[in-house]
Amino acid sequence: MGILAVILIALTASLHVGFLVLEMFLWTKPQGRAVFRMTAERAETTRVLAANQGLYNGFLAAGLFWSLIQPAPAFALQLKVFFLVCVIVAAIYGAWSAKPRILLVQGGPAMLALLFVLLAS
Image (cartoon, rainbow, N blue to C red; front, side, top):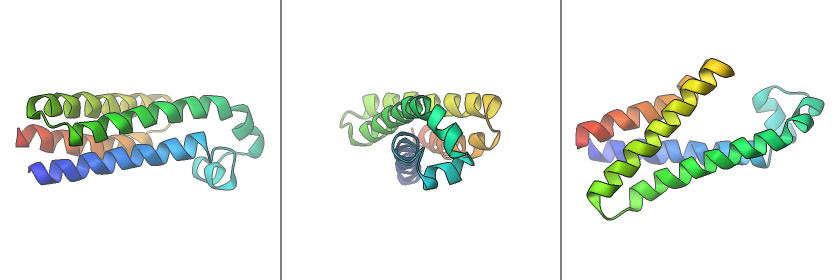
């Protein structure tokens, strides 16, 4: 259970690094516009908001990676639970406010990771 939890946390963190790159650096580029199905004009007008959102995704990724290298087991567990719950809450809000698919893409791996973290503890 513990190994699967670590793999799922690393996957969730890696996805959030990917979101950071998309939102901060590729938002107005053809790759970013294709992922989010936006025109060049819409991408440009929302560029600053997307970069801000990307930065927050980076903080989530950093917290999840931190939880994997934290040597104190009790604190590592607290970090894992806290940051996974943050991701899940963000996914729920994103699904409600933007696209339902966000719950699966962003929240799915985090929910599975949280389940395995709790089972392993």
